[in-house]
Amino acid sequence: TPPAQKHDGANAHSQQSPAARLSEIFLPRGSSMPNMRHHFSALLSAINPSEDRSNLAKQLPGEVREFLEDHEFATANPHTRLSGSYARDTAICDIKDVDVLLFIPDSHLERTPNSVLLDVKRVLDNYPDASAETSGQRRSVHLEFPRHDLHLDIVPVVAPDGIEAALMVPDRPQQQWI
Image (cartoon, rainbow, N blue to C red):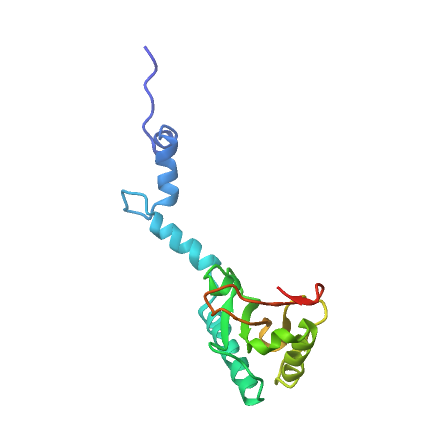
């Protein structure tokens, strides 16, 4: 006959199934069922942008739109729209950039993409506490906010068939609207 086994805590633990041992690790004390909601919430809080950062990412595009309006830069309805990961609610960790579509009148399609981007940049050059840049940008004006460690990529767009249809964006290397 096999020798009698001790029933101390260490031996009992070693006889547990792997699932039981994982449950001890991943379950809140006193819980009898896996609590995936708890772990998913913990994961989301670790990767989601902070509320302050999200608020800043919402606030700055509106302020830029108002600045453009105050400086008589013609826009078209709906004027601006967020795009990219922040707009899709897929931004993670610390938001570093926000993509903004800047709707402009259809008449801009008659101009070169470079001239339109440079016009947007000229106005944004006067934006306080920010620097505007177009070099290295194919389709946007890069507006850097060093104090906030955040930048906006502002893409001028034309919506000749409405905002739900395909949008036209400037492409500097191709020297055309695509």
